[in-house]
Amino acid sequence: MDSLITASARALAAGDPLGALKRVALRNDAPALALRGIAMAQLGDFPRAKELLRRAARAFTAKEAVARARCVVAEAEVALASRDLSRPAKALDGARATLEQHGDRLNAAFARYLAVRRLLLIGHLDDVERMLADLDPAPFPPALRTAHEFVIAGIAMRRLRTNEARAALTRAEQAAHQARIPALTAEVESAFRILNTPAARRIARGEERLLLLEEVESLLASKALVIDACRNVVRNADTVVSLTTRPVLFALARTLGEAWPGDVPRDVLLVRAFGARFVDESHRARLRVEIGRLRRMLRPLTAITATQRGFALKPRTREVVVLARPVEEEHGAVLAFLADGESWSSSALALALGASQRTVQRALDELAAAGKVQSFGQARARRWITPTVPGFTTILLLPAPLPAE
Image (cartoon, rainbow, N blue to C red; front, side, top):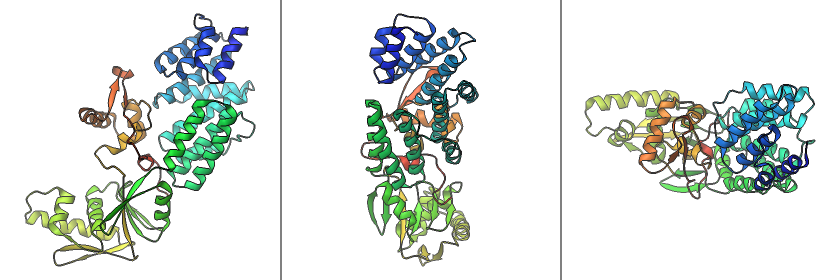
């Protein structure tokens, strides 16, 4: 490898893409194409980076299997950064196997981390933890140890284990300082801000206040009956009743929870649950049916009694709390993913949300009409972005199993 390629690689490792480009910008041999692709990715030009890395992979000969595999890994990292989550995992797995076969343990481990981060983004936390169990970060350089701690922190945040998340981010901060890469340090600082900004609202006895993530964790571990509007469940420390597929029942439960210890008039319940403008006997009959269903589902947690004017909760605990998102609006889950500051395609959002691409596209069109998101590019290259809601974290909207599961 010639001196210019070596100097360019060292510049990239130090987080200096412009310095790397100065040395190889006019070269079209395979190593230079690969380095130019990585540099363009660090500068944020992901389409150009993908093109250069693909050209580099084709330019390497069959005898240069390791170099070709490294290009595949680099392209996978660009795909992850640009939130191209639909990219097949087979190519990355094949590249990882090639690197392991040729003794390139460092890049093979990096390929595994890319697969782990993709699974983390779409909420497959159990799979992530199984893959992490096979990885020992101790022999890795600081930048890769930082990535390892980021994954641990991401799992802990989604599972609402804030002490574990804070400890992982502290280790990530130390590794990032050792790596001396400013972008890594900035990413750690951004992750720390998630732990120190409001994650939800607590509504109880007619009063509201914002909660940090660790306060949400404490609330869910308490003896209170929590009606969780972030995940559409009703729970206490021991029992979780999911109403994610029963929006009418959850609307009734939330309305009763917000009014506790008082009751809720039947007309109010009809409006909140069914959106009824004009109430007739058929609406009242349906309300009785739905209240009966809710009683059966919430029997392990609370009773629901009829009053003279409506219904009220009679919990087995001394406190009822409604846990709501810090900012509630339609299509909040879509906004939660876009709020990470990255550009997403509608197909990637659909994969992460577990929804159809058409449903996600309709949501994006409505948000765009309201001026809340913006798009750039055309056809398959179209991406969506939005500014983060200032002062709030959206961690409770991201996909994850319930903390009790």
